[in-house]
Amino acid sequence: MISLLLHNSTDPSKMALSPGDPNSYSRPDQVKTTHVHLDLEIDFEKKVLTGSALLTLEKIDTQAGVVILDGRKLIIHGIKDEATGDVLEYEYGSPSGFGEKLEIKLPTSSSTDLKIRVSYTTSPESSALQWLSPAQTAGKKHPYLFSQCEAIHARSMLPCQDTPSVKATYSASITAPADLTVLMSAIRDGEEVVNNKKVAKFIQKVPIQSYLIAIAAGALESRKIGPRSHVWSEAEFVEKAAFDFSETETMLATAEELCGPYVWGIYDILVLPPSFPFGGMENPCLTFATPTLLSGDKSNADVIAHEIAHSWTGNLVTNFNFEHFWLNEGFTVFTERKIVGRMHGEPARHFSAILRWKDLEETVNVNLGPTNPLTALVPKLAGVDPDDAFSVVPYEKGSTFLWYLEDTVGGAAKFEPFLKAYYKKFAYQSIHSNTFKEFFLEQFASVQAIKSIDWDTWFNKPGMPIYKPKFDESLAKESWDLANKWQSWDVATPAPFGKEFENFSPTQKQEFLGTLINGTPLKHAKLEKMGAMYSLNDCSNVEIVFRWIRLGIKARWEPSVPEALRLATVQGRMKFVRPLFKDLYGWEEKRQQAIDTFQAHRGEMMYVCAEMVAKDLHIST
Image (cartoon, rainbow, N blue to C red; front, side):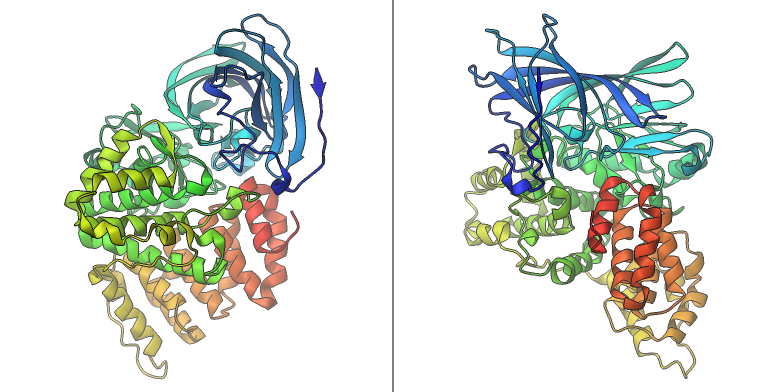
């Protein structure tokens, strides 16, 4: 029996949500998912996945009569008890900004373990799925599908308890056109061709949260880049990717030294089409990566170090809900930089932190505001979509807090063994910030200095961190000195510049441009000279090009406008797209041009990117 509860409320704050997660309907304290098996077919013509999800459930409360799942625009065809075949009653509806509530009446049984099969079809507007026509791919011959489920978009791909507090194993059987390759965030478990269609099978034996379930299908090739790693992409990118990510095994081995054994078996990388909205996504066994990382000089490969670190920080030890997201990203940034430091030296670790400190300052002091509650390390998210709360704050403020704790207890020699013990202690669990705090205080009980830690301010107060590390500025100083030369140069005199920029590393070039962006706008004559002298308009490193364009927009330099609109539309990485559109929105004479360009390309962007840019441009969504 189906009873639709159409309250037509779009106010998430009025929802009856889980007491443990303000962004989920599910009640894992009553009934919890322990395994998911997906049996789905990819329909490129209709832009849907259709089939079933077989859910293995454990009754935590033996008196529980229902299980509550999250959904978003799913079409439910029917629900059955897998053991008996009996049809189960359910209610699906109560739409809100967070999706819909799926409440299923459980079969009468004395067993605490149940299996139910939900037959369903996704919506063509699923917020988790990006469907690309052949024309939108590099090869131009075949369609492409990929998913992005973080933060709460898994519910639009499958009915599930869409909260990081629930971790389950999963398996899948995916039917697709025979000439395409299907990949998932799991170990490949064979494939066969049936009725001119390919059936690919997968198994993920390590329990994961719902947002780590991932799928991709396209005309893909692979290259082996290490004993447990392949890189996958369309043929046009695969050799470039194999070169830029050739140090993957070294990063993995370094991460294991820091964090403990790697439990996921393989570590593959999939380079996605340009519309992928993030730098990388830590889907287990198969990191998703943006092609904007392919610089030809390995300078952007630290994103892979970041995703590798997630194998412990976030994927193994997980934040209980998205209010504690810093336990995921703060730890990952901290560990990523430890990997960089061991591979390239401590000055490189410090320089990476210096580079992103400016991003944190811009986010806190300009974009959000220093009193914005979303700049707290542990923000309150009741009624707030985690996508709206997403920023560099949990990444950089969280990492800074760990740097502070390391300094407080006496340095890396004491703190790194503690972190390894922390990952071992809480592996396969989802925890709160206070759980980390209690373990830290227990492990360092004999250290007098920990009594001075102001946990409440760190966790709950908005604004910049109350501590700034004493960074080794040796690599940054060269960038700052050159920036000062450009700022003080009188254009009526000969240019006093030599080969400094040419001799910089790619990250030093980023810091040079970033320093200028944070200063007073440059005169147009200086920008013209700089562009010609440093060949910035021909640079292949998107991180450098992005900063060069922003520098021009700040100076209201006309040549930067078409380049900004081009970069904001040929790729969909939010790190670049959102600031560029925001910058152009702030240039009043270019505001309408920015809005018109966004509207013309909105359909090419993935859901989360399009929604966020629309809000940045104050366009009704």
